[in-house]
Image 1 (cartoon, helix red, strand yellow):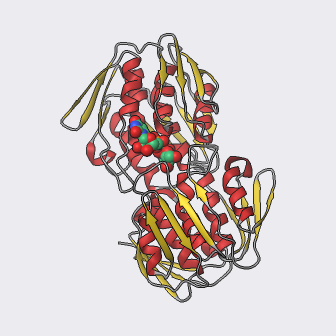
Image 2 (cartoon, helix red, strand yellow; image 1 turned 90 degrees about the vertical axis):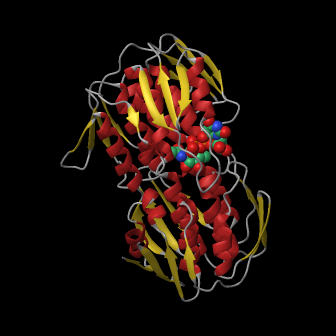
Image 3 (tube, protein in one colour; image 1 turned 135 degrees about the horizontal axis):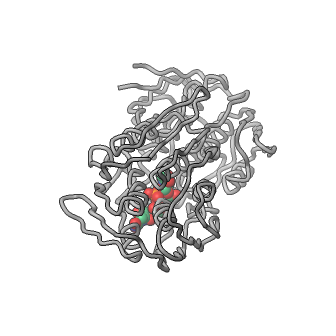
Length: 417
Ligand code: UD1
């Protein structure tokens, strides 16, 4: 298993390019299932989750090709097997995003239940309830969701909780339903808007994406389209936090401060000077950060996917920070590993109290999930001496060439096979 070896203490400096967003690319790739004509995508990140989804779609009959500029073409002209097996879904929860499109296009789908994951239970009951409201007949048998519908019917759907992939699944299904669907309490994440833009380019009739009420007027078929995937706001935030924690100065290209305002605000509070350009962000930091409190919440509030990275920053903050996690019930596993580097963290329920220490010391640590891994890398970059991060296959699910990009910024980091 690969590990990362990091020699900390170098302020990051220089410029890197931010990749396309994993959490936009995955639902958009699933949207290809909705049309018999090809969908051409650019700015798709090279990540393990993307490869997993390509394999899953390929198994269903979707033809996948890459053009000379690494654009991805997905041709779902013939979907012969509307089936997502457990072996694939268990490695990537986002596989559930095939459910809505398969049901709408093929009239049937058999998709494994994702099961629990390291950061919490994460059920998919709201995806199922929403599709049932649209007239689908759904049973859960032997760990599989078995869904059928001649043609889905538009419905008014209220989701009790704000769910990102739930909103995306229902929005995709509604594109081919008969009549109008209204999703209330919809997720407002920029990735939902990017998916809606791609669906609109395919001929869908969608209004309100980016607000908490999305209205979809169903059509009988969608066409092919070309779409460029939006930049990854979590990768952007991760590099900004890494630069701030290390006391560096970086410029990130192919991204925008507009998609992560809550994160930029917190970094300013920590003492960073941030300049937002049209398609780039620059950050400069002198000296150690000030501790910052945060509370995770659905967009546009502070994202749960940035909580672990800010905990690493707060470990060396001047002061004490209180971090509250409201989205996932078990998302502090990085805290125990950060303590191995000398961090002072106390956890009670969904709250972590982080007292800043002047210095972290390198140690061997183990990554437990995607964003937890990123926080350990950030801590390793600022720690004195050598840090070894094990189980980095989590990182490879969501960060494109992370060690190459960090090396480009002057970090002493290498992958050991
Ligand atoms: C998406 C993101 C993930 C991010 C999360 C929250 C993708 C591929 N993944 O995950 O990176 O951390 O949003 O911003 O976009 N819930 C239910 N029932 C459901 C669905 C969700 O109870 O049917 C609960 C979840 O357990 C969680 C909360 O709702 O407590 C929000 O989860 P959700 O927004 O659905 O997360 P994902 O879409 O899985």
